[in-house]
Image (cartoon, rainbow over all chains, first blue to last red; front, top):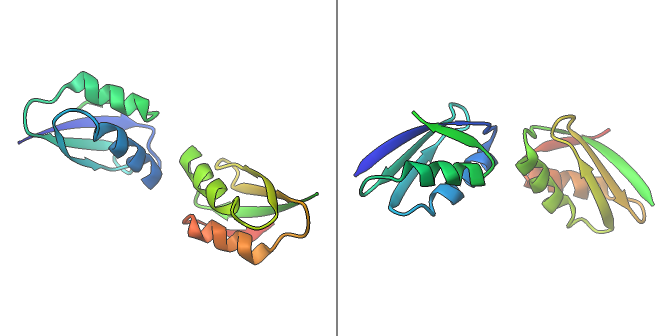
Length: 69
Length: 69
């Protein structure tokens, strides 16, 4: 199990957290997502190595921008 | 056609506007909803007289609080 952390810009509320969670949960291998609008922190736990580009594309798909922390 | 205006507290983003819109659109007689997270203004257009209590209950159901403006 690996946890990879990203910093996301633009979340303001629980709906935003939900939108991120829905998109990122579709990335291959993702097993757990912890996301906080208050801090902008997105922690993604996966069985194997995570595809950063896929995670960041999912974040953008949800309407936000992110970088690997 | 009557437009009734409410002031809603707690919206921060477009998702919040969407949540309010979904709930308030279920109130009897509602024909149009204009809502802004930026100003907190909710304008509800209806054919006849609007049931304020039903609108404010819908706002609370969405997770916010409102008052007739």
